[in-house]
Length: 227
Ligand code: SF4
Image (cartoon, rainbow, N blue to C red; front, side, top):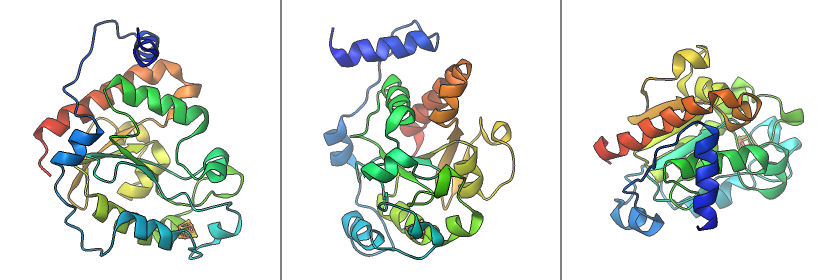
């Protein structure tokens, strides 16, 4: 049995899913081939935007960062996952969702036939807040300069917000996660689903089956959402 399949079966057993799952998932090439060019009002490419963001000092978070963590994945992805901010590992490696939470996110995605080659992963702010505190409202608003341009260029079918902080920031809501989960939202015309942050699931593994249900809903939506 391939290592990837063993990895997936272990995760599905962990969350109590014992029936075989299969998805008519396009691989990254198929996703790329079927994607329409982004109807972006922002000019340039994602790589050009990333190069511009790399030297950004628009907010105080520039002072403590090692590097700007712009985002990673398929620029033609149908799904974009969004967390709150880079942590220590992300700040050092320059990639969102690495470390233990990132590995769990990989498992969650794999359980519904996704991986880092066919999704895009980013954060609401691109620089690590000191001591891993939550990003502050003005920092999130300032970083929207990059965030909104990035989403315009990506033009995904759906967005998945990971955790309360990202959900409240993007949706500009003070509702608790429980109230934001389980229904669809909208961000500038893009359908948005909220689920748990992998770091929370590491602390509360009994909630993994709920995140599984969220990701299944996300996959279902791809079949019905036009791009
Ligand atoms: S968090 Fe965003 S706005 Fe602030 S310095 Fe980093 S890239 Fe610029």
